[in-house]
Image 1 (cartoon, one colour):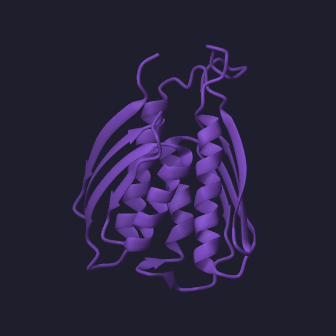
Image 2 (image 1 turned 90 degrees about the horizontal axis):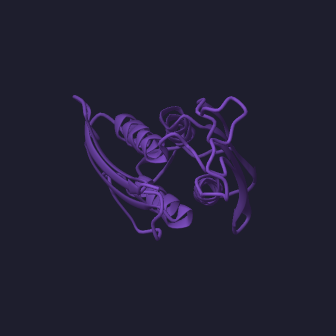
Length: 195
């Protein structure tokens, strides 16, 4: 099988982004977006999914965090979709729970080829560092849309928004790690014959 690695660029009037993603990596992550907490979450995602991820973004942070956060998630999702190819020989489904102290999150993934996201994080703060809390569910939704995957992420309990968000990213990473892994079959895991 060919290596599942993609390098992409995205340039708009609002952001300029490059991403390199290797699905069969070791969890090496580097992210430079100008938003510290966003970088922390993308590095966390790479670490626990065991993806190798390099992300560089120059965005219009003088406006706000929206374009940077959304466009980075879209490009990572696009890279994931392209790295999966025709999705032949994948486990396809993944689910995981991840705790962080008092917070507990669950993520369920289906690499179905159909984009859908249901995100319930229960965040109450306005922002975590320079990342607005309203953008966090949008990051998951943008990743699911561009990655052509079905995604459910729920924070089941927690009091600290940093902990809840980080637990959610860790749960997603663990679910993706399982879903993108290869099984013992070489077919496309769908009765339709295509994903």
